[in-house]
Amino acid sequence: MHKKKFFSLCIAILLLCTSSPLWAAQDISLLTVNGADGSDEYSVKLQILILMTMLSFIPAFLIMCTSFTRIIIVLAILRQALGLQQSPPNQVLVGLALIFTMLIMRPVWTDIYDNAYIPYENNEMTLVDSLKTAAVPLRKFMLEQTQEQTLEQVTKIAQEPMAEKPEDIPFLVLLPAFVLSELKAAFQIGFMIFLPFLIIDLVVASILMSMGMMMLSPLIVSLPFKLLIFVVVDGWGMIMGSLSQSFWIGG
Image (cartoon, rainbow, N blue to C red; front, side):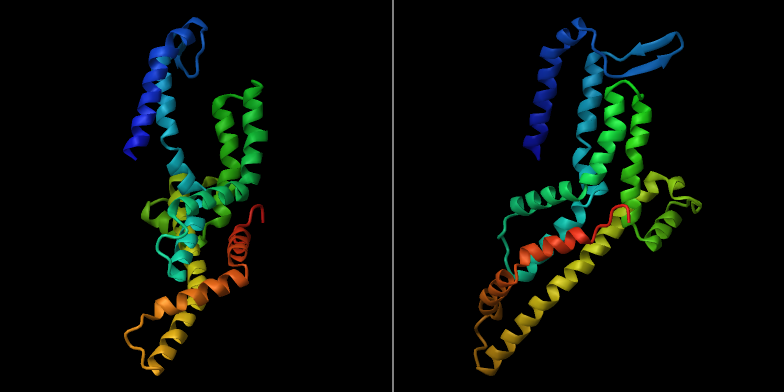
């Protein structure tokens, strides 16, 4: 984590030291503010600082507003159910979760790209209008995955009135409700995954006790059987297929 922060800081310093004169010479401006005398431009250094700060929120956005949370939790529970501690490693699980997050969220990204980014790039829409347009499909996805009971609880905690329309729900209320709903769904799926492996452990433990092998760990004996069954039934394909079908977009 410190290395990533140091790397980002180095990039920011490099941009400030090398790119600022060039950008100023080419009269490039990224952000503007409307002042009393007209439109005033932020300095290039301040623009870069704001952009670097916005980039630091991308990991939090990925975790909080997409399907990543549910997928990574289910994969972690699956590894625990199999009795494996370090295999697959965390990097593999995170990479797999990122790939399937991109696939599941592709309709949302496509909608944002076609209806928000392209008009903004063609100067057909302002930045504020583009952000408002981009928020519509994302909010729709989050609402479809958010449980109504959880949304009501978060609304009471926030001391906000119940919204009559979905578009009237504040984003600061929708975001925690969505995350809590994702956690609940992930643990429900994880329980269904954990149950058959637990039955295998109980059967193996009963057989070992009946044979008088008290000192032999049941986990060591049951691990090959769990791996064999998981591979034979194409467990990875079934898990990822069920996870993908647990999200409904536009339904």
